[in-house]
Image (cartoon, rainbow, N blue to C red; front, side, top):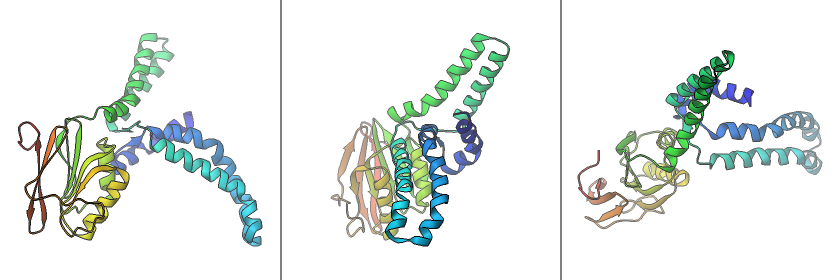
Length: 261
């Protein structure tokens, strides 16, 4: 556990700016995958050469342990990735560093209150991301990429893609960093194939209850709403009109009908 924690802390300065956060589940995943990692590497190297020379069914039989170990690592990855534990941002990492320092100083000087405060700080830093997932804040409008806007209010989450020009991996990281677990409404405003591709990737990672798109959109799951229609989800109202390039979507608070951001 100490080695895993040290490794996660070491990669945090690169992981957080690049991918938007450090998954809390990484610690659990590494601890569960560790028993298989060593045998997998040793057996894979030892059995790889003779299996490559012999080939065929004998090679497949030789690599049965390899398949079992790889299946275990893959199952750990899938299971832990689905856990609602959230991601650690830079403020969380700074709180963890401060808490760890307090624990170290408290133990060295035999100051129980300081050590207990450090433990509480570390626990709060680790638990806060999961609490954010359970009770996401109402942030109104938030830009999560060029041509991609996220609305959240009253427990509802709406993502509008309006000619999105953001790389899909960066969009996914931004949505994950915003503690998005699913979407109530996903809007693909433009009929082009690029927007459809991005929408399909988003739908696969963050399943949407309703997907809206313009006529002739290259998105199989999209519903074509009538012009001037309103769709209310939670504390948001999605108003749809048509323009030459596709959909013109306005998102407003359900009560005030004023733009929420």
